[in-house]
Every structure is written in structure tokens, then in C-alpha cells.
Image 1: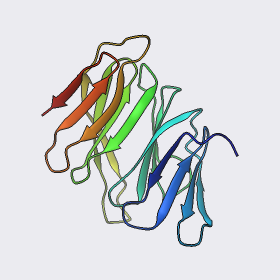
Image 2 (image 1 turned 45 degrees about the vertical axis):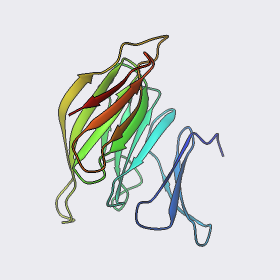
Image 3 (image 1 turned 60 degrees about the vertical axis):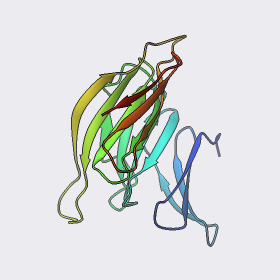
Length: 168
């Protein structure tokens, strides 16, 4: 149902996430069965990132929005981001640190502190840290992709201006 836009694997379990334009479906790779259907309330999902714990998911969309989802809590978004000036091209979690970043078509990269607790009584806390003016938009495209260093709090960005930057 719908065109597949992006896919991701669970970091710890044999689960596969497939995003269409409006929904994210989670499949068990062992049985092939649908486990969960998430409703991020976004119009055109462009990117998905799974938290290293596997319990949280962030989705970005071409309609300038993002959604943080606590998959143990609900199939609806826990928090929504609607502060972006362009389409979200990429979203990534840092593999070890509580960092989260969105690459936006206006050439900027939004970096957040996303603290997740093991205590089920404590909600996740999302705090904006920095907006990086990473790239000069070219043909309505800006920051296209991002990647975190596996150990350091370094962020690598790639843009439509043919540049790659390392932010430390």
C-alpha cells in the first residue's frame, strides 16, 4: 500500500521498518509478519532513523516536518517538529551519544539533544542545540545527507553545493 520511500533495520532485533508516503510498517524478519503500523502524521516521509536502543524512531518529511515516536508508548508521534524552512532530506541519531540531527533543504542542519531514559516513568527530552548553516542551497536543494562519527560528537554533512563538511 503506497510507494516505499525509505527502509531501516532495528539495531538489536530482527525487525525491518518500511516507510511509505504516510505510514511506517515494522516487520519481523523471522516470521515475515507485520508487527506494528506507525502513524507519524506526516504527508511525505523522506527519512527514518531508529534510536540505538531500538525503542524510539524519528521520521522526517518533505512537508517540512518531523516526528519523534516512542514505539513502546504509542503508534502516534510523541513529539512533532515543524520549525523547518525546507523539506527534511535526512535524519540521524548518533550511535552512542544523545544527539539527533535533521538535514534540511534550506541548507541548514538542526541538531538536537534527545535524551532517552530507561525508566518508563520518565519521558524523552528533546532540546534544540544548534542550527548549522551548513550548505548553500542549489536548485532548491540544500543539505542532502548527514552522518555522525561512531565515537566522537562529530557531524558530517553533504550538500547540493558539492561540499562535505565535518562539524566538531
